[in-house]
Image (cartoon, rainbow, N blue to C red; front, side):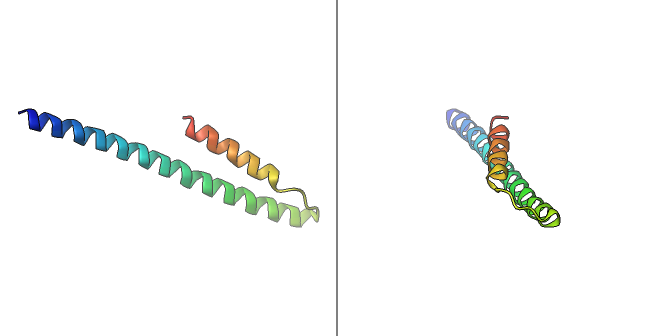
Length: 72
């Protein structure tokens, strides 16, 4: 009986860690998609108005978004 309880607790702990890892993986995928989309749209927009600005603003925005996602 005691071995079964230990196994159940261990399985519960592993499933919790797996859920946390999956959530982190989803957030990182969203972050990478967000950054890539913003970067592409910024480059396309800059090419249409024939004005090039610094891209660091996009990077800072994306890191802010990542920080916000990880704090959820």
